[in-house]
Length: 139
Image (cartoon, rainbow, N blue to C red; front, side, top):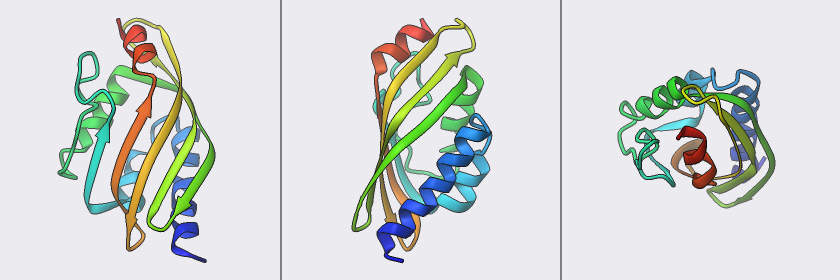
């Protein structure tokens, strides 16, 4: 199996667990996907009302992203329908929906995740989604 195919296999399993657990598989990401050092970013870049969705360069501090996400939102689904891999990079494309716990509103959005791997572990991540619909659901 090529490195690109192995990286896709790692992500397919992680996304399957993420979807099936409705966001409860955080430890799997840390144990099986993330490298010891990872650059992790999100398109809101820490803007309110998603302060937790910012840039992380410290794996230990990255837990704050998942803590914030899970305390403020409840996953409806996380569906990845396509993986495109080239060399050490993988792009995952699909959609996701989350309910804001304060407002009860649902944000449904297309989702793109960019990954870079080194030695079988993720060292870079950046997520793209419809921030307008997410911010509206949180307001």
